[in-house]
Length: 232
Length: 232
Image 1 (cartoon, rainbow over the protein chains, first blue to last red):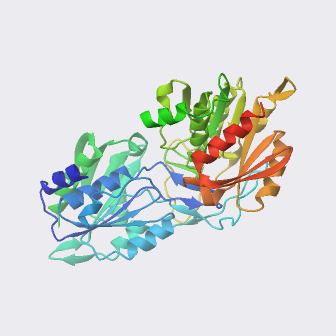
Image 2 (image 1 turned 30 degrees about the horizontal axis):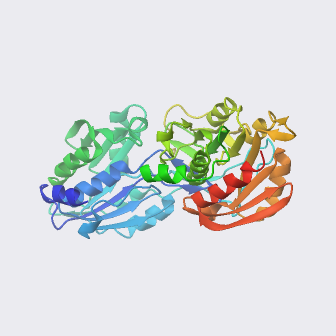
Image 3 (image 1 turned 90 degrees about the horizontal axis):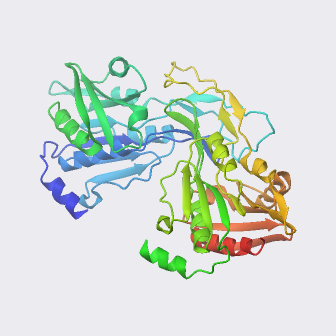
């Protein structure tokens, strides 16, 4: 922790005085008190971005889905962490924090929740399969993007979306950028990166796309933070 | 690790020369390459039983679902760990290891898997909810219990099931013991204990039921191991 603080101290500080909001990790949609639908996100990329933003001088609010990661650089007193479980909870926690300069939507948020989660653990009924009724979850990134205003000719907050795709990353990421109406989407091939300390990014903004070669997630996060800092 | 080995060295050794098979953790049933159905089991109780069995002198095979826990007392060379993801994989790994003296079915195994997991990440189709078709998973404990023989008038292997219920623990656990045809079921109130280092057990066998008061999972595991050791 002391070494980490020393390292942080010597990073460039382009985000001094800036507020950064980050969602990270998976969400968990309860089926009953025991079971639920989740995804393979480990939270490592979002937590690395939180650390890199702190190193760059920002005040950080980290909204984290269920994951076992330690809050980065907690001793700086510049990070607030809100733990949530479901996509609905993550939406609520995020929308309460829209007043920020940069928003990184890194969490892998469930598109659907269960309409009526069972209050008691569902018992196995022989070979009869359960029927799950779904409801669409709120779209956190799209809803936050609707609150964006222009400040000094620039979008405020500056919204960065993440895309985890198993194929056609460039195409899906570019589509996501347009559909959500945000200036930047960062793509990473999901199944390769989940749980790993390594990642490889494809950054897509209005000027085109840029690859950041495979590296530790913290190294990538630092490059991403320097890049986004120039946009605001 | 050295302290842990020293502690292990001084525990009673009623399982010297015995082989113990344990399943632990949740299973993860893939919906697509990213999403899946899982449960809130942390794996801590199963891993604690593995440690307690090693301390008691046993040779242990631990079949673990997706969890971040370290293999206990690995340096003893007396533990083998097989990592699995789905219930089907856990069933296969367990059935290959039926030649044991005690079997602890601690894992929270999904009753149902997804009939046809998508090969590519499913895209959100507006407000239209996905339709998931389920198939019943194999019943690991019931299938292993079918292989049980009698050795010196005692069932071999001695099978211990676990029950995580949100209500009526005693009733459900006793029913499970009879349904699966096994000599012992250990009950714990699931949602209270998942992820926690503490637990509280209700041990049910042919002679009746016995409560083990709230304590650290490792303490409970040691008591359980001493109790089961007397049965074989």
